Length: 257
Image (cartoon, rainbow, N blue to C red; front, side, top):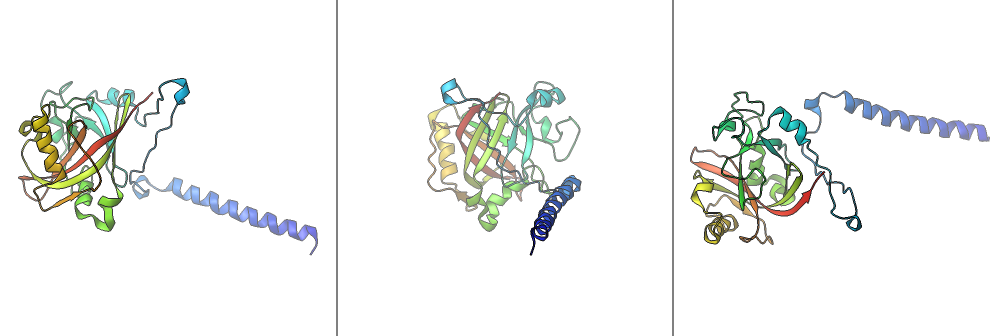
């Protein structure tokens, strides 16, 4: 076979591969948003400098200047890889004085049954408290904090495979490791425990490490003490006097630019 025939065979093969790849990208681009994969993926930050150049800053995935221009009560953003949880965190007080305003209002201040993901005014909007409690509804359409219940069912080893929570805040990225998920009652956690005393904080930590409920999952090999900072995600369960909690301990804190 002469060289020209080999040349045309190779050229044809290369063209076919390029056509398939280009077509795949075009199909994905033309899909409506609802048909695209929407699970939150891990977002490793990119360092802006090396240790020899001084403090390492990383890029913040959220533009809080734009977000707070929309609503100054947006104080953070929560993302849990492996779930659809990828929402702003609201805290009333700056604009709306009502404590639980975002229980039934969205980020734009519109009355909505789904409300928002939010923290109460007793918690610092800097996420520096020993325990920051974050609230969200368990919506039937799978939005808001509904996916927290995947840690309960543990289908396909969900609890074992998914252990990370990211909280983005102005100038900060906080990374937490999920170590406990369990059914709790409806008591007000921040009012029921004194998290600024060793005794009160230790009492709640003990409940997370060895929950009294039979509906519980605790990750082995995770050490948590009253010197650590945690977040507690709270959502509804079957009864009005029940809450499902997912708890993570802070394992990394980064400054952002």
